[in-house]
Length: 395
Image 1: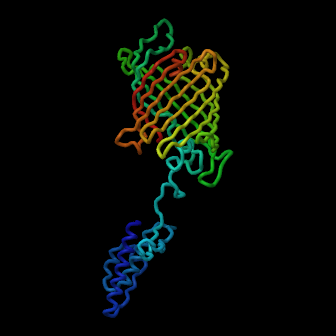
Image 2 (image 1 turned 180 degrees about the horizontal axis):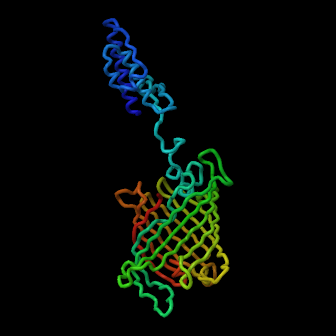
Image 3 (image 1 turned 135 degrees about the horizontal axis):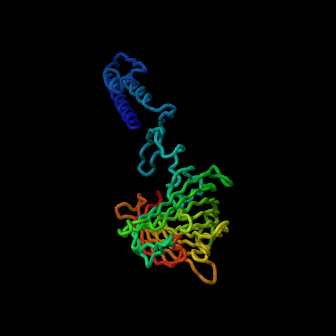
């Protein structure tokens, strides 16, 4: 509609200039008045048919253009741009057309995709300008499909007189992870785009190990872990030494289970505190640090995972280096915080395809894991695992 309106104005102005030239050579023909309803009902062709009166044709085109605008649309306005002092060109009139199509109701870009804000601010929607509203489904941890090779697998306990299945060391791993913001502005809010907003999130992650290559056992899923969690995020903007900025504190409640009943059940519950900081290195690069410290909740019934926190750990530190738009390197360390040190280390490298490094969430994903807790079934078995596959991030 905007293009048609502009073309109509240009045609009308040209007709007006022609009419002015002809008026110097001959007297103006009789005026033709078009009904206001005629242009909108017959279209611009009715105005084009008026050949004898340029003024009437101009009014006709104007009426037709106005009829094409949606209801309550502000009219177009003419404004004068300042003269250019460099070349001495005179001021010119510029046609300012009303905006008819925006990405958001208030005309701002979609907040969690607005790259003028930092990575942490967009991910957790820490500021009003990064808000993507509540109950929108977003990515959490990477959604992945990978081929896995490990030094060994931990079969489930044998049931009855049967023996544990003979699983292969090579398998596939599937991870699904989503989250949604269920509340915002509970304790901290503001009207300016830069103002911080706190938020409450619900996240869910599911990780499965699939014995795709174990044909003799009908290719079963060896284990599947489910991890729902509730996360409260409180934003900060605290300057730290070395150019770092402390951006958020958080509180979480998480349940992790393999969804099985005894004797195959594996589950535990914990609460955690978290914090995150970031440092900008360039337009497309930066550093992020995130730490979590958790406490296991006491089991009211039989403990399916005795001493699990002594294996998986009680604290986690993740460092991420965004090298450029296409490459991200991260290291996650977990520690039991006991003299008998256990835990794990996980190194992730994500690389965007060369064809589309800037506008896709698809990444080639290489992961190296060493330690305890790669899955609940393997929580007390030390494993070295190499995964190579595809992941979907930032969608």
